[in-house]
Length: 397
Ligand SMILES: [Ca+2]
Image 1 (cartoon, rainbow, N blue to C red):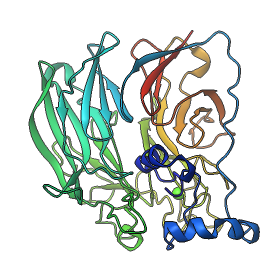
Image 2: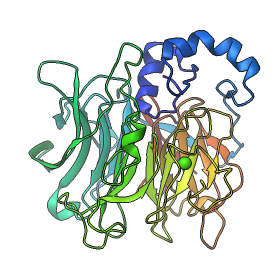
Image 3: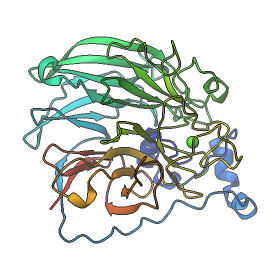
Image 4: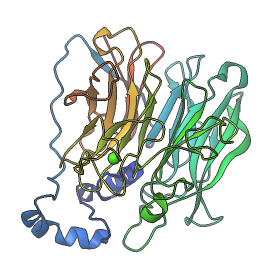
């Protein structure tokens, strides 16, 4: 895994850590094989001033004795995304394609549907969103990595829409197909940088955060989905008012985004992105913005206005940021409208206070809770919910 997480791959992350914990701290150098990186890292780190520090030691959360953390549901396998329906049920996407339901705090034993996914480290059921009009339509959306039939070879990423009926996912419709997908190789079995987070903005459009799938040249082309935040109508068509006329892209220059949510006051999307050697980012995403990759990771040092700098970046530390959410509840007023994100490498829930009026800058984040490695959301009850490899936790007074 490389970069740890950087990847975001979260999946990668995930998988890597799950399969070989000792390798989760390995570092990817662009253009070099993972094996070569591992072999060279000890000597390289001593002579390359830009070589990232080891994965940071998990920081200690800021004490908040007034808050109580409990396990909300366990027995899950890599719950990479979860969303609350208006009726209080929680939909959960497990990495290897199972969509689960939690009702009244209890996990239904059978998935509502199991999508056929590749079992790579950074591939699978990567994104989950519910129709803003779910109460009426019962529709939900999943972005997943499809294998070639009968194999584990990645064929494509695809965005599908399903309807929940009696606890089953039915009437699958492909909304956007043939999205790029990372290809495994002997040096890299992860299938890098798929991204795959999806979510509805307050404008009713469906946003899709796509990684570069380790194809930098392709990512430079506006018409390619690689490394873009896409903006779509719910049926997959391109909105007439998209910022690049006739194009699905809303913004460009992402590498391995694995968190997506929308600011409760401005409505702008925010994404986490994973850098190649540290320089992990939280980004406030404006229409037509170029977020740098593959030319720039982290803040640009080129003194130009071509690239939009991140709201915050990790410098040389490799966190592997994953899920991102704004706190929009009323149970914890001190968190109101703050940005929260998880990271794979230390398993922390980070809080970032954004500075008004445009919420485009912040100081350093603080750790609020652990373990948070995959996803975070504000629940309808005003609690914060976040997940690690096998469980979802609830934080509230
Ligand atoms: Ca960037």
